[in-house]
Length: 145
Image (cartoon, rainbow, N blue to C red; front, side, top):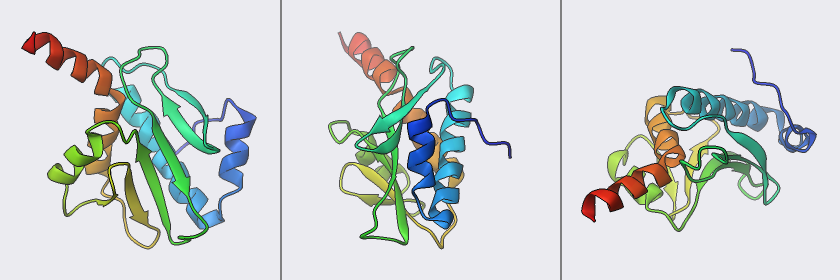
């Protein structure tokens, strides 16, 4: 799989700072985010930036979604995570839909063990839901109005 080039040196530097095995896992999640965005109607091009020093993906141009962020903490070296806005219902929805496939931290993250495979289909659904969150929320309000 060809890796999407970085457009911001600070983001590349953030990935370089991760331990090699975790970096590979996070780069794989990065590719899944870009692939999902490209195949999801209305999302458009993503902006890749840093939030809290971690790689983050925003739908700045389309405004269709909520930020998705990737991270790793030295305090939990065998885990890495995909973070979502804790003020949304996204993680609660994911927990209901994928209780066996994915592991969660509170209302903000899907957590992965470095030694376990990633449930890519379930995760792609979660990424698409995040990247269309505002569009879907607006649609629900319009229907209910």
